[in-house]
Amino acid sequence: MRRWIVCLLLGALAAGCSRAPDEAALRASLETELATRLPGLLALADVRRMGSAPDAAGGRIVYFRASLKLVRDHDFAAWAGPGSAQLAAVLGAGPKGLEGIVKGGNKAGSTLGVNGTARFREAGDGWTFVAAPAATAAPPAEAAQDVPETRLDRLLGAINAAARVSETAMKPPGVLIVEQELDDAWTRIQGRLTRARAGYALAAGPEDGEYWRVAKAIEAVATESELRTTALATAGSLDNLRLLAAGKVALVLVQSDVAAAAFRGALPASADVPTLSGLRALGALYPEPLQVLARADAPLANLADVRGRRVNLGPEGSGTRLAALAALAAHGLAPADFAEATALAPGEALAALAAGRLDAALQVIGAPAAQIQAAAARSPLKLVGLADDAVARLVKAEPAYVPYAIPAGTYPGQAAPVRTVAVTALLAGTDALTAREAARIAALVYDRVDYVAAGSLQGGLIGRAHARDGVTVPLHDGVLKPPETH
Image (cartoon, rainbow, N blue to C red):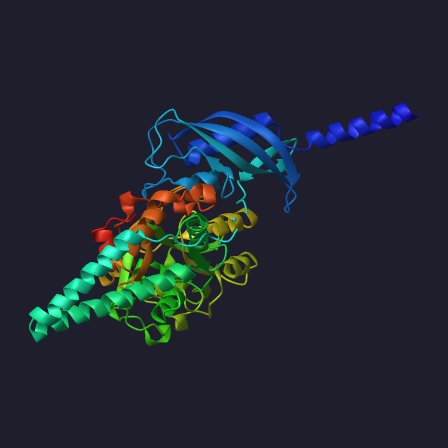
């Protein structure tokens, strides 16, 4: 009897093990995905199946560890792509699932490691690959003084001597100039001391969005230095600029079109953002295309076809909403032309789209976006392009918009590039930051943070090679002519 039970259990286990794709099926599927969505870039050197689990749709998710060989030299930080985010999307890798990507570019023959996932469904006696599911971060030390005390004594002594000479030897205009310069210096010193004690608040965006991931990656490295930053969750670009104007944050992540309009004082009154003539960019981070999403079976050829439908324009106070309204206007559309115009957050909009409560959703975000990847894995979606003449009108009206094509293969089932416009994600502050502060923050952001390792795949595009691309407001003096920062 005991032997019969053991045999029965072993038989059940064997049957259970057979109800999942094997390593050969996994390898074949991954090789096809790489050839289709990243042609001529990577070869699958090795793959090990690490187990599987059922998914919500009744299929199986297979976990794997793979080694990839680079076929040609490639810089995953190049904006022309494909970047780290697209590689992770193709292979179902999580934010920290890629290894071996090198700043400055990888050479042909180099090896990348991937911890990824692949999704399958049963088809007859076998399994069919459907899509890679999107995988879903001690108190800081006191800030070190910038200069030794002995040097500080010398500087104070020199200033004191110069001031006394000015009082006795200069005419009244000269004395006034010295007083004004010393007043300005004291104001800057007080500002820096306050920021050194409290750290630099960095207004990002919604939690788990791309801005948030970038800000958290910066925060993780900044806690190890005197340049402490704190990521703040916000509604997005407009909200960030309101906080900056009120003096509640020192740094913001902001879309380049929103920054340009705020600098010129051209934002609509409803944005409630004052003219920010003191806005200064510390650098560009990565491109952010406007992505128009619809269900895969929707009869929409381009954005003009959303007239009379239910459309999400993005939350009030977000840069997405500003770009969405501009893109719709370029197609001759306004919110009144829709059956319904909603202001849902990105995750809510994607859920409503999948449930059939929306016909289209607009979002400005780096591509591929983890949220969109996850939504497309649950319910088939497609990208809807912009009309060529509308793109031309947008670019002419606002230089912050640049023509952009979302590359084929960015999302599952996307066989061709999709025409749209893109803005640039900027790191910005105001001219209240000193040149030394701006230079040190830029050095931290561009030279010290490994964004991919920290869980920000879009951050993999951040580098000095593109730091001035798409910048729409003046660069800070500390970035243009960086002083000695140590």
